[in-house]
Length: 366
Image (cartoon, rainbow, N blue to C red; front, side):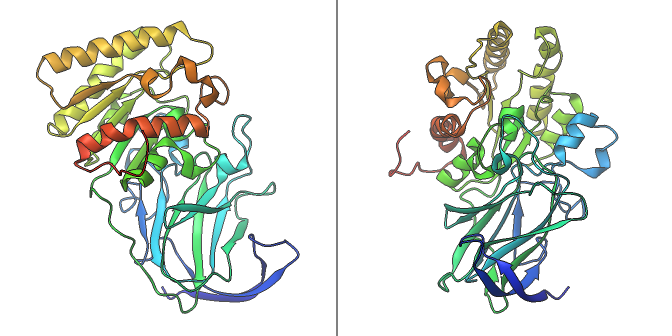
């Protein structure tokens, strides 16, 4: 499909709102061959739809999980371009409505250039189905080839309709990741991204930029319970590393006992040579006694499986990522803020390096 060219006055989001520019854009669909979409493993099967789960299993996936899977958390649109202007057209299903995440964290589409944050598009207060929002990230940049990453919203349904670039921009595929396979994370709201202030500040996104690694986010807020269908879906992905961080959404230890080891077994059976990290709950302000039960249980399961010969299985203590003495890293007593996610990423980095055959950058501290 040939790109649509649009010339009209628009507000440049990087300038004073009163300044109007005459912009000339070629509007390209995210599925255009010049772009790469990462983090949505069933993208092709779903006909290019920007959702996290396969349509073929919609009737088998618990409804709350399916609805959360419509949020493209972890999805990224990546490309290289020398465009002097960058814009996006997006349709949101509604405005932000969460108490512990503001509009940027819930609905934001983050723009990163050459690994550095530059701008965010968010759902306005009047966002509604059928209403197209147009956001200009930048206009008037020097003409220079840049690596562009758009991080998709963590907690909002968002149909990215098109990306606007200069009519004459040279645009193509981004650089390759250090490992062709992604790290696949399955878990709870903490995994989905609650409560990062922006979509580019989840611990998976931070770690991905630090180590140039791809990732898939299978976190489901309040619903990371480890059901068999979700174990099967997780195991469908060809991963460099699996990270299992689910337990807190289970109502009690009996529920966790029903699903945890079978989930682990499902992934291991399909991927006998892929490393798996199992994370115990991070610290919480209320020190929920249930979580300590979960920690002991996960330790027992992992220790038993390692003793039975699974040498590609590793226990990661949540307290080593964000512990009781670091509660400033939480938003609401439970979910990490940006500081908490930074700590988690920094402390997971050496482990990820050891399992993905990378060299840890020397210009960073862990």
